[in-house]
Length: 92
Image 1 (cartoon, rainbow, N blue to C red):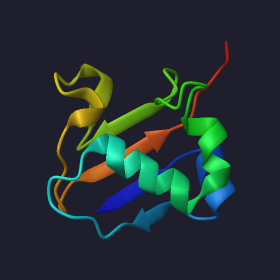
Image 2: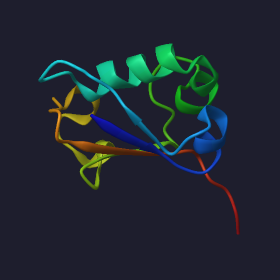
Image 3: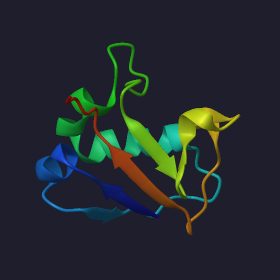
Image 4: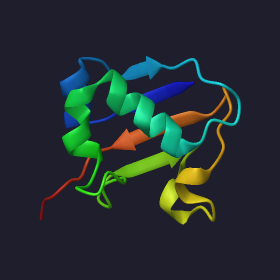
């Protein structure tokens, strides 16, 4: 599964794209856990204090924000899905 990281997340892991070999129907939440286990430095950027996805992080599955999905992080994934993860951004 292709996961693209943007902005500061890309800087932290040192590359734009990482491929994960996960079982079919792995959920977005399980993928998030694998990402944080693989790159522990991302944890403080991706996760809120309660261990859930930081509400300011944008996690897209095939171009759709997971927060807008009826299943949210319980959305099952397949190997062809493209995941894009954007860190919180601020500006004016």
